[in-house]
Image 1 (spheres, rainbow, N blue to C red):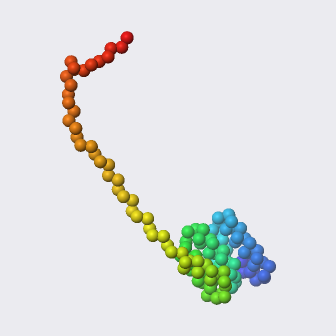
Image 2: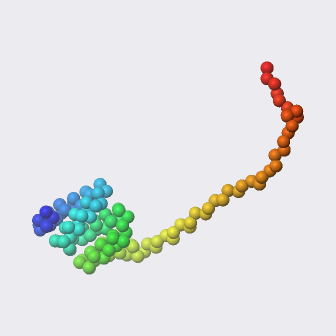
Image 3: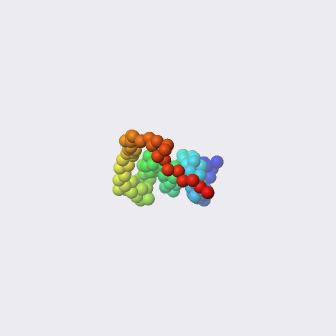
Length: 128
């Protein structure tokens, strides 16, 4: 189906629109599947690479997102938008991992000897 759609310029915009709709609805897997299958017949579609990048980032798959940008640049070396994504990634310095949580050790109070009070010395208030 996507081969037929991608064969005409008008229908390629339909695929891009559908993929964007998937992104907006956080349907990342569907957007990825649609874009990957569409790229087989249209590997020069810059927009599909950009959508794929966003979908992979939405899933937290930054490695795949970077790879798809590189693949896009191999097919479209003059793409300023893809180059910009590569530059942004170079500028980002990963934050150092947080330090391991310190174990809190509760201090156990020392044992204190309890003095036994003989019953005759215990004052008891008698109620009415």
